[in-house]
Structure formats: structure tokens, C-alpha cells
Length: 125
View: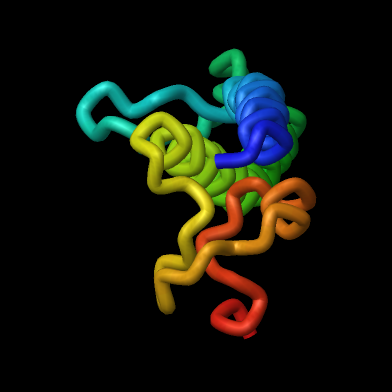
């Protein structure tokens, strides 16, 4: 492997690790790790204070709406975190950068732009 390729891989790994921290930080704002299923997350439900009355019902309706809005965001962040973890694992195992469909090497420029890429451009389309 060329020196410039090794350096590029180090930079990609650094970028992935930075992105992992940022993604996990965002995910922790709306979800908690599922202790029973590794890699799975559970959305936090914004529980109310237990008040009753009309204002409480309105607040509870708002909380349900907020919860349903969080679910797709949680799913997207969890999927991104999983793809980042997969890319880092591939770097560590030496299999990073190979297209999962055709087996060809994914161009370095593509990996620098989209480090979690699983497929070359041809197979992605």
C-alpha cells in the first residue's frame, strides 16, 4: 500500500471516529441503548408530570407527537452509527474499501467523501 493511501486511510478513520462521537451524542439526546439488544436503541418518551386536566391532556398530546417525530430520527442516527462502526471494523480488519457487491476496490476519492460507502459507484446505482 502506498504511503499516501495509508495516510488517507488514517485520515478516513479519524473522520469516522469524529463522526461516530457526534452521531452518538445526537442519538443519546433522544434515545438510550437497548441493554438487551446490542446496537439497538430505544427512543426516550418525554413523560409528563402526572398532572390531570385539559392542559395536561394537551401536553400529553404534544409529548406523543414529539415521540413519533423522534422515532425516524432515532432510526436514521442508529443506522448511521452502525454503518460507521462497520467501516471502522473493516479498517481494523484490513477489508475496508472493497465493494460488497462486486468485490472491486472502491475509489479512494469516494471513500474520502463518503467513508461509510459499502459499494462502488457502479454497484450503488
